[in-house]
View (cartoon, one colour):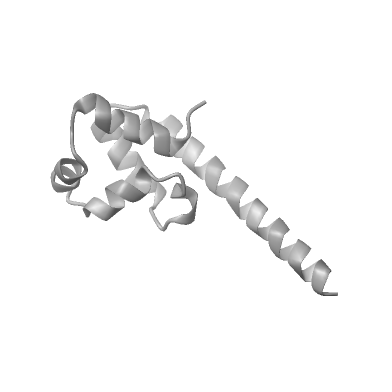
Amino acid sequence: MKSVAEQLAQGRWNKGLTVREVASALNLSPQTISFTESKNLDRTMVSAKTVNTIATFYGLNAVKIEELYRKEQQIQKAKRKEAREQAKAWKE
């Protein structure tokens, strides 16, 4: 399954729109649109609501996109926690 970022980038591409056009239409910054298409989406401060809004604009299944986004965030949170615990254990 494609990541949220990949699906959003594909949705924009399928509509033939630029980042600036989407940003203007949704009253968001171009940086926000770029962040949603970033491979590091899970590390950005883009809200699930914003991801949902963009997915809806592209005609994507916003509910599935938002669910996947939340899962990706949970996975990354767990990975960061594990990395912190490993670093702490190495220091001891």
